[in-house]
Image 1: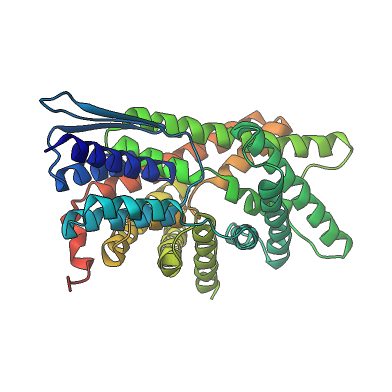
Image 2 (image 1 turned 45 degrees about the vertical axis):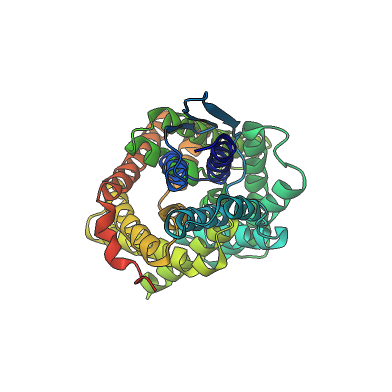
Length: 262
Length: 147
């Protein structure tokens, strides 16, 4: 296999791995996809080592090897792109599409847009309301959680776009959820409708809970990727702890201001 | 009736999370089914034998089976269905009650809720890991025929 082709295949494999990893693929899938791509294009001596936040790949060769390193910082999960990359990898393996076409399709996948902001806000509000009901609340609890989820996602999109770091962002967002949830509960109470703040707040914080990180962490551990599993579980613990701090701070502040807890 | 209603709410909740995670629209309903199946199983287990970790274990295993079957049938990574469907089972309430007891200074309640949350997390992990230990061939029967 000639040098330029080898370089192109390595770039393609690393690019697909990078895209999978940053959009929420688990380590095993990333590694396997990269190896399959290399094998499908007849790239012998391909090796890849994948971590939660980085990829190392190389191709051996008599005329010197080729290498590629990618730093993949944590970013937003986009399962639609993961699904599209899965389809692309299948086409490479089964239909043997040429590398140039694969590279073009990879660019298309990277350009798949995120869900429109308004739709995300609606989904977050509906999700929060549903969870308030699932955990034992009634319609009024659901409505209050709806408000909390709505305001939280709006704030997440408008003001807290990741520049403050994960910990502070999650503390602030869970504090916002708690404050809005308590206010909504109080508003219902003054209108003579009883709500249970526990259910309202639980529904409201569920969109922040690190369910995705936990799930992926467990799967990384199960596949023997202990280091990546550890990184993700630390991530989940930090986010979980941040939520507890944010919720707790607002509840404690309310108690200090003379309000009754619960 | 409550049971059916709860499953319906779990369906909608899971679809809401599918939207938040930018799942392709064609898979929304399948994510919803995965979440509803897990929640139905959780409720049934809790009714028969009220232990949240045990019910979480069984429900997670069932929903992971659904996620893998849908993955084969829909030709879409199982992650897509699993991540959305698992949300009703993730111990968000546990985190909340643990933090709440901590703020109240109720250290016994904090420890009890914390331990329960950890148990549920371990149960979920076991459920996922056990079903992913099954060979991929077991789920190939759900794959659509090649055209």
